[in-house]
Amino acid sequence: MRKARYYLLILLLPLLVGLSGCGLPGLGSSGKDAIKVSSVSTTESQILANMIAELVEHETNEKVELVNNLGSSIVVQQSMMQGSSDISAGRYDGTEITATLKMKPTKDPVKAQEIVKTQFLKRYNQTWFPTYGFADTYAFMVSDATAKKYHLETISDLAKVGSKLSAGVDSSWLNRVGDGYPAFQKAYGFKFKKATPMQVGLVYDSLAAKKMDVVLGYSTDGRIKSYHLKVLKDDRQFFPPYNCSLVATNQILKAHPELKPLLSRLDGKIDLTTMQNLNYEVDNNLLEPSVVAHNFLVKHNYFRAGGAK
Image 1 (cartoon, rainbow, N blue to C red):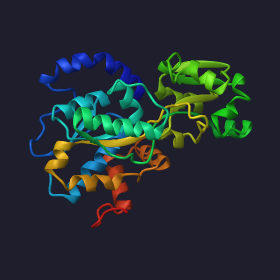
Image 2: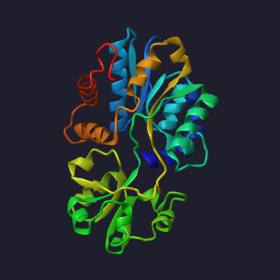
Image 3: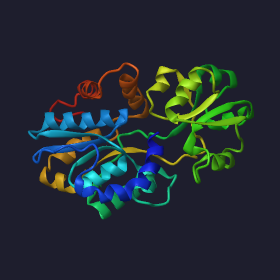
Image 4: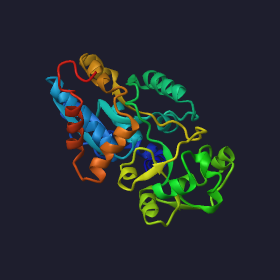
């Protein structure tokens, strides 16, 4: 769903830019003295934004304002360029390379991080922080029963039985050039019995209801845990990297020198399983993102002098 929004927003970007003088959707009247942390509407982005906001508010004397529910990372980027937000909570390198920077995708995760770090500094005077430690990418998944039945650990393992299985996949993925289904068939050398286009939000339910044998979802989705799904390893690294990081304007980092080392406490501290569990607490157990963020910070001692090590 997140990726589908990007393509829609690419089409709408000229309109959004044209409306920039009128403000962006989701932005309220920002306090001039507050440090503004922006996020999109996904569970993951909301958790990360609350985490950053509470960390800054607790460890400094600065006021913090959340700029929530922006439509996509493109809108978030516009808000930062206009000064409507200072820090964006969850940005994905693979997405930004194609959607914001308009560059060709790369499947090399190290190169992807270097591209966004260099280009965001050069073009926007913004600092791209090291990844939190997880990537939210496309992932094929099956039920535990299916994994055990066919001895599935990797996508390559699906090649033996793929022609017998029905797959539910993101509608936009079926015909997409580069990392879509046509290229996937060439990379892995097989195709499914049937590939059905679906909204990503429905694929998990379809798998649980046994209407599909295998689905294409997102690697950090909390429903992976809710439905006890088995994520198959992309052993040929077909999908581009989508490592998640926070981004800050250099204006805010210069005005508040204490921010950079404080925000860096989150570098590499959230792995894939941790992010899945945090999303699960919101999507399955219905806790507020602010509560989940607070519990994470307390559990890992981020409020002690010196912070988490």
